[in-house]
Image (tube, rainbow, N blue to C red):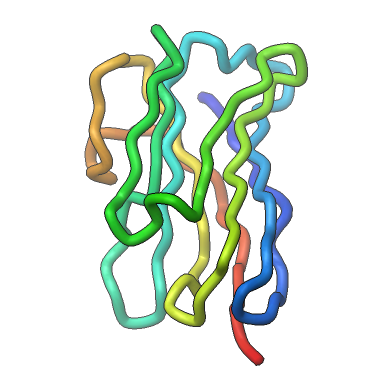
Length: 124
């Protein structure tokens, strides 16, 4: 069973930045496509971004394009989500998820492995 651990969440003012990390202790993430998702109170979980295992290609939700960047450091066995120009509507619990397939999009049902989430709160 793959265990994912998110970190890096916190409280930030509008316009600020955060970088989230997703790690899998003891497991190589090279062969997994990793996605970032978020869930705000009272809303469904939504896809934010993903990075493919095969070629490192990325996909972003329209709501975060140009502000968020997903990347992976295979040497550190970690995937990052760099978030800039944060808005109050970005407030949510952020989850990373993994799937062996190289072809998933941003639907939560495509990812069988999930972390516990990290809270991101954007407020003045």
